[in-house]
Amino acid sequence: MNMNTEFLLCGDCKSVLLKIPGTVPNAPEGTAPLAAGVVEASHEKHVPVAVRHADTVSVDVGSTLHPMTAEHYILWILLRTDTGFHIRTLAPGQEPKADFVLAKQEKPVTVYAMCNIHGLWQADM
Image (cartoon, rainbow, N blue to C red; front, side, top):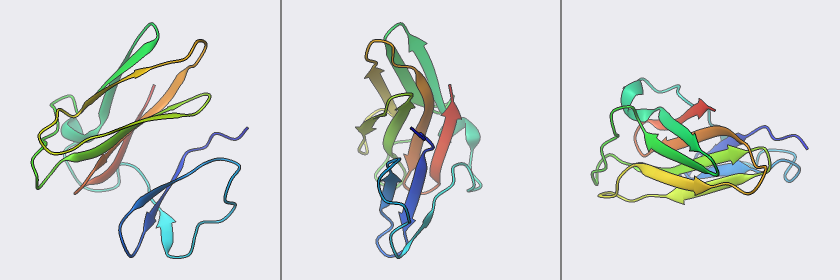
């Protein structure tokens, strides 16, 4: 199965869509591809830092933790594995961190973080 991860941004409501491989062949009308790390911003506060511990992946958003104020925060952290996806939604006031438990034989591939101001960021594992 093709496991390329594609994100789409709705031009009207600014929602982010995850295009699941093997489902919708074309992007829905009004959406455009969303690329990671294209907005000028502090890499040390946006690029996810992921560490694997046996069957768990721990993610911090930024080598210096990203702020989590009402004005500027991380919306979600997504882990792509060789078999699917894990996601953790966040809100202002929470720490920009997530722990994901892997199934037996599941391998982490890429981790993504979505900032409400600076967009999508990623780190390969």
